[in-house]
Image 1 (cartoon, rainbow, N blue to C red):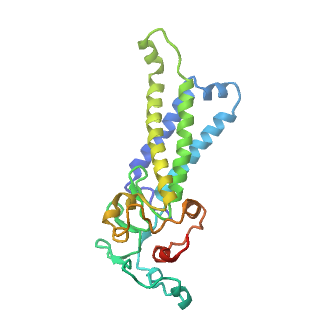
Image 2 (image 1 turned 120 degrees about the vertical axis):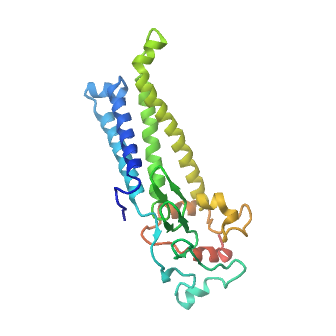
Image 3 (image 1 turned 60 degrees about the vertical axis):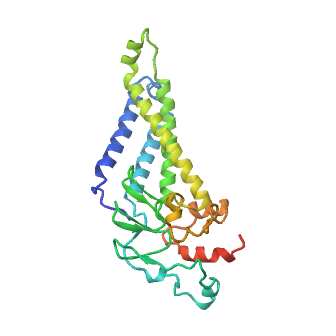
Length: 273
């Protein structure tokens, strides 16, 4: 399930953890509400804040070390013919102009199921490939996408809370020079948190939007170059089952088993959705 902790992303993950706890320490060392509550013996807010930071760090490592859905061998059970019963095959429309054969990856020489793509950085094909994220130094794919979105949500909550705490720690001074001397470190931390908050907010919003359409970042950006989407209209998505069903399937569907997107794709034409 998890890759080697000391892989190519070790420096990125270490930098993320150090930055997270340094900013947290700054918030406790300055005269913020967190420190005031701690000094007054009201530990609920400081403890909750630290626990939320810890949860965000654990989610970060879970997403960055998790197998995103690497294709490591040819799985005959996921061919389009699927080896299903005649009744199940009858539910799938016969091949039409939309029919597509699985192609072999030119890099790892494995058959690529629909919606998969080879990642040049990870050197593997990934099921339901979304993108390679340098922040987590891992691909976002079928197995870790929902955890990535959950991580973004928790991280955004931590960042906004931290930004509010930083704002409460600024102290007045007689001059700008004196103000910068007393608040410079906290100001730098607040600026970093504000920039990260904006980045995470945009990421989370874009991913929730794409999830609601049951499309991926790669499909959204490169649909004109993807064989199974090239023939579709600008507003046509063969995997879209409606916002509610898309969100339910993404967040609540049982994990652990790969989705056969060929079935979804070829059934869509006859599905009364």
